[in-house]
Image (cartoon, rainbow, N blue to C red; front, side, top):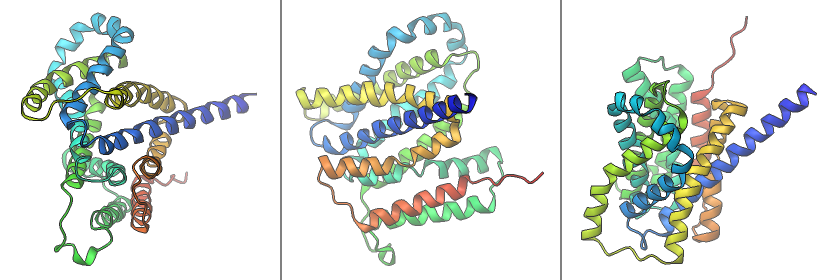
Length: 304
């Protein structure tokens, strides 16, 4: 009976992780598909407006109760909010202006490599041999993707600026993820998430005002409204809840492995909705990136 219950919990955990990853993959489709309809900062701004409004009834009580702790750790919360809310997703939408949804999703899963490098440089964590080889393989995969397979002509080709924006976003997300390890223990997850949404939105407001005054106005129609609701409710809230529940059931390492299927979902969605071509280069890049990351995070069990 216990074994059956445990298997059921594991299945639910993986199901939640897959669902969250599939939802997040849609964010890259919207970033690319609406690159001419919604300015990048406006999409990010309205995404977090929706997220705050929807999340407020569930987390407001916790936020008020823990307000003293929030004030105590306001500097840390501000840094985390700027990185994870203000900058990270906005860079994704900027990247979507000039590169494909498939490239966005493939490059996005390089963030664990940045975590390894940053942890070594600043936290003095040991980099094992398999991590070094894994990093090299991932880099080859990313270069193969960006150069469209023409590695020999690396210094002669023109790179898409969107690919660089996405790499920068991955670096930002890595820093953000490392900082989350230092989340104040007295802050509940509900209060922490809501206050970072609010602070991140506050720092995003001046850039939204600037874009509003310098770019064509955002036209609210059925497509733009439904897209904003999707990234605000599904990608920002539902996926977050599912992801955290999956970690409870199967643990962060196993749930993290599911995240690396994101390019598969994005590739399928991009092929169906955006008519983007899936080439052998994309498949080879995906295999190299996933193989490199799996090797980098592999930790052999010690023989007792």
